[in-house]
Length: 129
Image 1 (cartoon, rainbow, N blue to C red):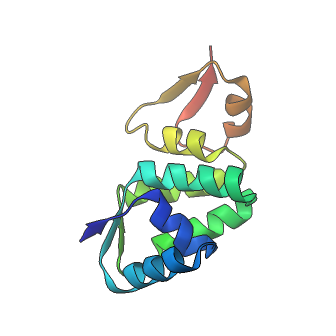
Image 2: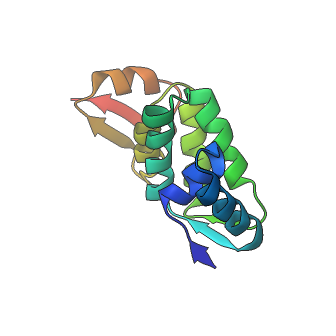
């Protein structure tokens, strides 16, 4: 199994650089691949900020990756929950933080916008202080 970096996933998704895209496609099509949560987090940021992907397009791309038979995600249930929260309007980083809260009953933040967006959507109560 190989663990991949963000740049591999970005080339695989965007096809923006022919030589690296070909290598990424070959790798992603032939190897068993491990993707960490931090690489997914950075991939979302790069696709959104560097390539102008909207949340729906980012979510679709990350879900497609997660659904590949040869791909193993770090904490796949957490990532699935984060993608659901992202699709429900949370920022992906915030969604991943909340979904990664384990058995906590509350996720406390100074971010009132996050608390407002999360209200009624998360298994963990998100509360501002």
